[in-house]
Length: 390
Image (cartoon, rainbow, N blue to C red; front, side, top):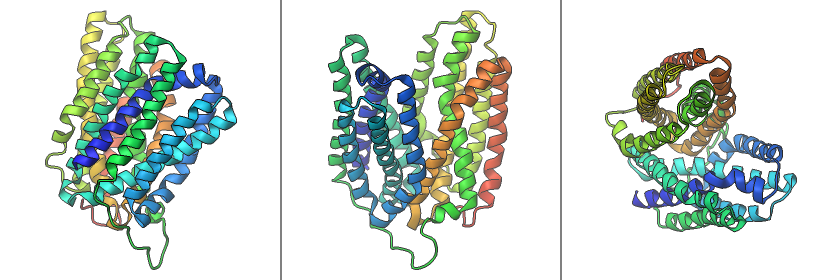
């Protein structure tokens, strides 16, 4: 487990550094227009979405460890190659390579976790790794902010190479992990069974939308709201993000205690969705208030939000591990993250339309979305074709 934690932290550190300056690198250094950059990223996202389940199947079939290491090495080369990209066609091709390799890491990493620890330790292990991810991204973000101070092309390139190096180091660390045996090829029937599991597909779509939306509430919704509808200082965004990161690092493991199986996970997800609905309502109450009151309510809403996020994350993992057959953890993980990508496509315009188009009422619309969505977890899990046991 320590090997997985170390690899996760190193990889997250590089990703955090790149996420801070990636857009500026592509537009200022690579010379891509914002429209070209968006088009390339969208093409890559589409390639990732359609490849996630088949790649997860390959992780099951050939063993997740070797494929995870291979994907990380491909990512190291791809991010280094970004230094030579200056046109949309070249960026679109490389974006597809990066997106598909990242899709493989999602399914393979989930299968590696499922196969490396006892069944009753999977939730806790996933929580520990999420804490390591948030910690790594937090530290990486600080390093990635240096180019914003130096304003030099070489500084941006340095961050890009740091991210590439993090993949190589993480891959080297993973060579010491215990391998998970490949799963036998089914003697008969469809290979991609996750795509025929309708209750699971419904869960992946629902949870993808819910998870993407709560992830973007503070990253997108709050900045738009503070800038357009209040007179509060914009540094409150940073305060809310710090509360969120600290909560995910320090409390994620604790949030998994006492959760056993997909049925329990559905209840936890429902509770988490209700808590996030409350956070949405508190954000909406800040309209027209003095700056001090807005600040206090934003901090209170951020605390409420992070506790709901921890609950929903825990519930999602319990359901995912509980519904996936032991012989198909990789492809079920991949299918789940395909649902997340659908949510990532829908949630930004949804949040923007609610916050800017509907004003205060928009926050209550989002709250209603979480309340209704949370109530759907139970019926979906009860329709599952296998026992909901994690």
